[in-house]
Image (spheres, rainbow, N blue to C red):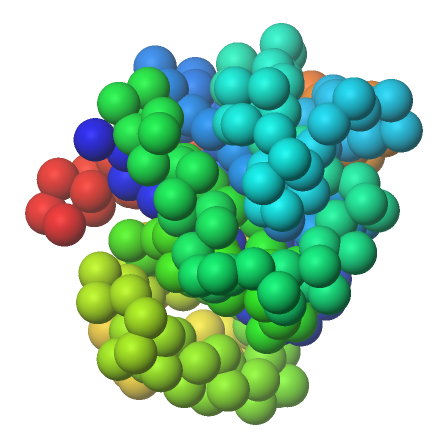
Amino acid sequence: MARIFAVANQKGGVGKTTTTVNLAAALAAHDQRVLLVDLDPQGNATMGSGVDKRSLGSSVYHLLVGLKTLPEVRARSENGGYDVLPANRDLAGAEVEMVDLDNRENRLRDALRTVDADYDFVLVDCPPSLSMLTLNGLCSAHGVIIPMQCEYYALEGLSDLVNTIKQVHAKLNRDLKIIGLLRVMFDPRSTLSQQVSAQLESHFGDKVFKAVIPRNVRLAEAPSHGLPGVVFDKAAKGSQAYLAFAAEMIERIQSL
Ligand code: ADP
Ligand code: MG
């Protein structure tokens, strides 16, 4: 049975896509069968996986509005070693079109059920909003991975996200839980980073992942080569941190 995780945070630029792409490739490197779902019309996870968003015959948009089946939409990240449900700007229109559809918050969940036996992990890269697309991610998932930068404002947005997750849990998806908070773009020399990190640990305890992703330029360079960082430069500190995070995820799902 596939374990489905939404990578979510309504803020932009906090490392959702970098985390989704690198976790997918790192899990694949640990011999896991992985499907990455790009739910952001920007298509960054698609491009970062080496799939060209400009030349897609069909995309996750077609899946959500019921024009195509999952196998028809699925692409492969050859270098990453995982499958991709790719996205591009077509997806921006899905939100409006889905208004008239039955069961619109469960379109992704229903599609993923058809491939449940084919994967160990499904990772959903959510857009930077609490929209119908993000709601589809949350309704399909067993858990949420929240990437966070350890800066002052990071904690402010967190309560909105936690409340949204609680509401989805109460009304739409009893399986949903926060699997963990992932500290990303971490700078160990910054006192503020250390303080916020300590605050997170005291508030959230073991919901804070042990793995910490450092700020590392190799992770930022990799997408321009159409490669996950862990493939582009496996030895880089950031890549090693994502490989450690993948091992931690594999361990965590044993107890879910
Ligand atoms: P989001 O998907 O939340 O908008 P991204 O993953 O696209 O965020 O990251 C935002 C920017 O930060 C991108 O330019 C990305 O390359 C960069 N970035 C993300 N994580 C790291 C990191 N650990 N070290 C250096 N740069 C990073
Ligand atoms: Mg993104």
